[in-house]
Every structure is written in C-alpha cells, then in structure tokens.
Amino acid sequence: MSANTFPAQIEPFKWAEQGFTWSGNLPLSRFARIAREAIGPVDHQQVQINCKLSMDAYLRLVWLDVQVETKVPLECQRCLGTVEEPLVSDVHLALVEDESLIERLDEDADFVVLGENESSTKGSFDQPAVVDLLALIEDELLLLLPLSPKHIACEHKHQPTEQDIVEEKRDNPFDVLASLKGKLN
Ligand SMILES: [Zn+2]
Image (cartoon, rainbow, N blue to C red; front, side, top):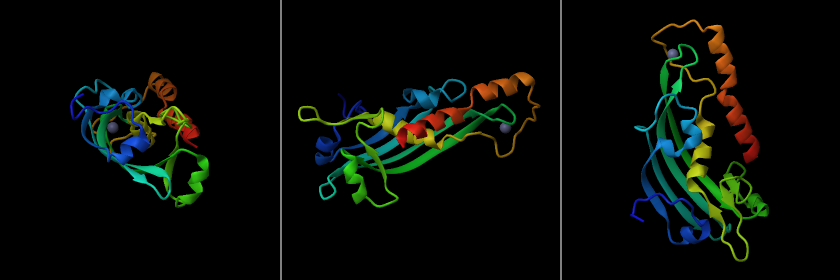
C-alpha cells in the first residue's frame, strides 16, 4: 500500500491511538451515490480530503475531523444546463461505540453510533469496530446536495416540456436525502 492510498476501512480506536491522518484527492467517481446525481462523466472531478482521527480517552470515543471539498456538475432545474455545485464541509464527528456515551457530548455535537449505519460496524470481543471512511464522508456530502440545483442566473432560458417535468419528478434528489436522513437519525 502506497503512503497515500486512501484506506478502505479503518479501525477507529486503534487508528486514533496511532494518530491517523490522511490528506489528498480522490476522484469523485469513487463516491458512487454522489456521482449518480451528477450529469455527464465525473472522471475529471476531484474530491479534496483532509482527515484525522483523535482519541478522547475521557469521553471514551474517537473524534473524526474531515475537511472535504469538491464540485459536482448537476442539472439546473430552470434551464437544464450544467451547474457546478460546490460542496464544502468541515466535519467534527464523534464515533461512539455505545449509545449511552452520547449523553456526555455537547448538545450540538454530531456523532455516529458505530454499527447503527451502513458505513460502520460495532466492535465485539474478538472483532474491532470498523468504519468505511469513504462512505462516512459521502454521507456528509450527500447532506449538502441541493434539493433543486439552479444557476444564480441562467444563460439560456428554457421552457420545460411535459417530458422534462415527468423526468424531474422521477429523479428528485430529495428522495435520496430523505431516506438518508431517516437512516442517520
Ligand atoms: Zn440554469
């Protein structure tokens, strides 16, 4: 594994103790759920990531800090042209093994209970907890996708046809967000 290969899975408690950090770019195509919302090929699009894990021995949890930044080509809902939507997030997320530890956190702290979403598994006596870091970062990016992407000012006016309206309803990105939020809460 080269020094800059993004890890597929991390063991948050072990890796936090070792002071895990990662900085680099990943192609947007690795984020399949985001890429699906994009129009056209996303091969040239990059996602900039800076992340680190740190142990909080007092709270018995791991903090995941991620700065992530990308641009996603989306379909403008007004003119149907391409609108480059910037997605920028600064995540400070507590990874906790047990729901009972949440009450020690500040009220407005963001957290993930390991094993309660598809991006992580809970640890057991012979298996450490494991997090799919890419999926977790993608969860955060999905929350930033606009429900109805639009240019601030469209260059080309377009009167939507009956066909466009039907397709817009079918591909409503709101459905994706709504189901994701349901899973996180
Ligand atoms: Zn437009």
